[in-house]
Length: 119
Image (cartoon, rainbow, N blue to C red; front, top):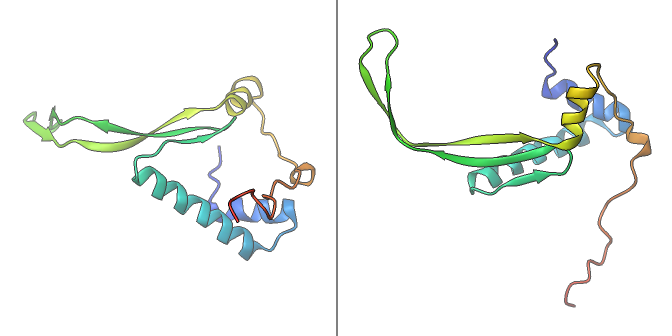
């Protein structure tokens, strides 16, 4: 099993889409930054077929130090839960081999110039 870094992922996307690496890097970083901001606000992020990110609140609790066996108070905290989406689940369960996405077949989904707002 290999580890894929953000740089390698950016390189794959740039190669597959024919976009400049700098532009892809800016978009990917913006995407990741926005995920962090939204989770920081406590929002739920849902990406159809990929999965859902949710902020979970963990209560304060008592734990035990494994070395000294003394009780330790663990403060409350927020953590992120990820629930796998349908397409990812199918890919991981039904197709043990790797899949490749073909970005050449992706339709242009950029929003129209006029979104129908009040003028």
